[in-house]
Length: 301
Image (cartoon, rainbow, N blue to C red; front, side):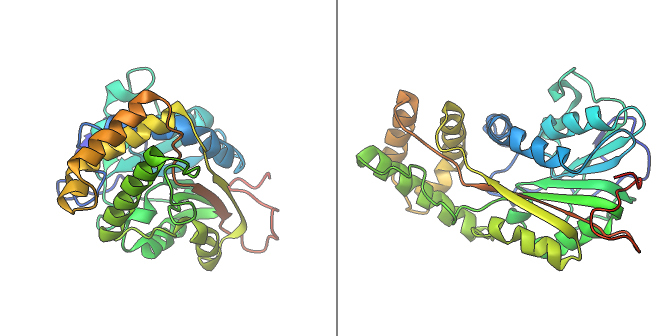
């Protein structure tokens, strides 16, 4: 198995085939690091708030699925230390090497492994917390994967799923008052078209609470985070457009000149650009014989 050494315990996922570029936003492209950092800057606060609400603490067993970078896993490792563990997986661990972590090393209690959640054997559970951010929306078998994740929860354990809903607010510039904003929205429409062509459900985020209840989880809570404008949003937009430029132009969705003008507008700092809303939802596996909110993975909440 290709993995980054850590000190986590338990059986790790079996080795899968070498990662392939089946996702539109492939982590092996040079813009991926910029995108991952920007996503963290925009959404980590909302993610940490949702995870904090589960009561995550020392001793918990956590699985960070499709991590991308180390930001969330590093936060979790600080909460579950010293006796807990965090398994961190992704189909491509390029951005999870030791030098990408805050202290330049994978923290104690953390194990990093390359793993394809759609095809590889599942890791050994159970887990007190399973978290997936901006992952399931990209998977054709997203409902089946969600069921697999829920099935690895310990009684009282939490599944936290956070996913985008581009159809809920499809524009790059909601305030479309001029030609630059019209162009930005044309580019964003082309990006949505590319996503849909890869099997992305553009209205998936809003369905996550219903999905969690359908899996038998209780105490389901959801919220949406929607940064209206930010310099980081422009950074994310630039990296995304540069990463998908060839696909946008090749499919005839925009011209090379339009891409160049949009990137120049982003560099000017005068374009108010937003991202798709991210819906964050959590649900808990019931404990046999216990009522709602009466128990947690270690029975003291």
